[in-house]
Image 1 (tube, rainbow, N blue to C red):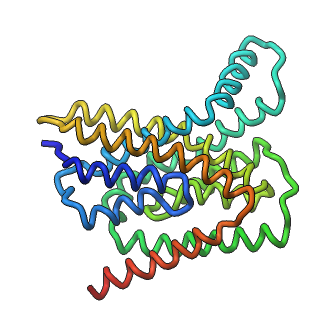
Image 2 (image 1 turned 45 degrees about the horizontal axis):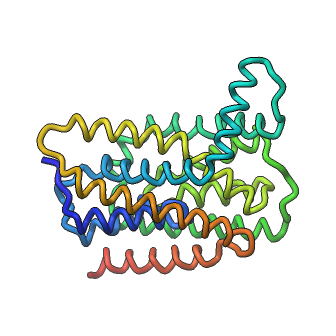
Image 3 (image 1 turned 90 degrees about the vertical axis):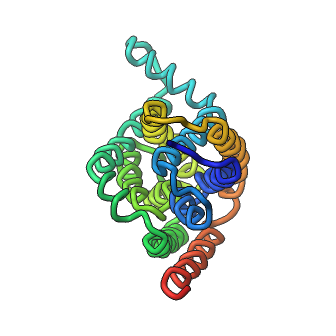
Length: 272
């Protein structure tokens, strides 16, 4: 039987909605939260993927005008009609950036879910991710952004996205910091990161949702629905907040948060 109580679904939905698009790792936080919630019977990866599907829908809603432009660009390109070159570059960059994580995700998903989903692993990866963000901020300060998005930069940001396969390494953080290292502004890198999230999380979420539907036994859809709605609404607020924040400020508040959380979880895992 697939079961999750309403309280657990509410908390997990809040955690996913708040953390998915901040550079602090939603998957890592979900793993940590489950250490304190009665969720032993949950098919964890499937439920997490459904929550990711909810936050993906929030991105689609928030960036619908951009997505509609990309759809029109693709249709016009297929019809050999004139297109906006900037939109075409973004479309190709998203396609190129999606490929690396899809390839390595298919290869490594089973290994990662079997051996790396633990609180201590999340703590270690959080610390490593924070160090990576520190390096990105240092390089950004030394070499202010001068580049624009290209297909090659999109592909390389997609390579950085592979880091997010590690539980505790934020997908948005990996792609944002990667974009900064490649010469994009924080805001441009953040927007591309949001759009790049759509293909993979939408595909994985739909696949896992189908797995839930096909599970034997009774599924408690009502609590799951609550988690999905909460995750969707919170994600809309967080997207708007983070885009405004990143225009003016650095990643340092999230770096400090990640380091403090990493040390705290490590201490608890080893000594408590």
